[in-house]
Image (tube, rainbow, N blue to C red; front, side, top):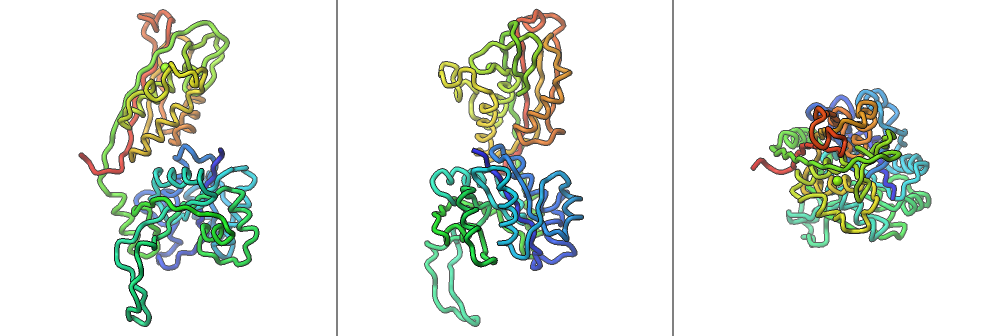
Length: 382
Ligand code: MG
């Protein structure tokens, strides 16, 4: 299942004021669009991310996000989304999320809820229940009170089966439909709703920048987790270590692929999430994990952390062995862990050490790995 995300950033956002379009203004140290992109780039279930920009904004975009794929949008949001879908077509995704660049505080949990809902329907979007009473007015006078129970506020990302939303846009006659869920629904596709998040608001008016700034300054807590794992070493063609294949005449023995680096890291993340250990989630007695690639253990731990309201901040892995030599593989391991965790390279560290020929690692009987991670939790400090 391949999932893509299209970030729509071509609008002019005139209601927000300011010298430059709102998506390129700063909240804290990063521009609005950088905050937004970071949420999708860090999400482990999303494989492809591209943005739709206004060609006039290219200098702003390249200053903020030189490495992220982009296409030029059209005169309306509808035309911009069409351009994004056309570009996403070649990436062969099964599901696509379409998100407004001006919603920088989208959480991993909201993204997950939308993705999960696409197992039931071709379209899904996050919504918020209304708390205030809703009135219909005309010329400053109340006309009637509306039934609040059936009215919700729509947010993004809106998620779709790629084939369904492409076909719906293909057959669309107008080019000014307000949102993508409407396009699918009017084409006859079912759109289900999931819980949105009040923090996932859209920066629309000048005062929203103040609100966004205070969101960044909102208190939060950090948690850490640590993990440790050992596997036996035996002569073999190759081994997997930190998600990288090492061909050095040595193998690691275990039920899964025995990647001690990924197992220690998985346990560290489970520790931060408060979710026990890898053996509880993936029992070695269960035949379905025989020979399994440990990538999936790591991704599962990250999704549990995300569900608990946490976002990884950094990971640090120490490999303890005499052989294989880790140095030649260190960069490849860092790159692989950055891919798997969604972290930037600077937040991933791999260390290697020996035990001076002492103990089981010193005698070359086994390889040990330790990991420590930190995560930012979206709650208030205890
Ligand atoms: Mg293990």
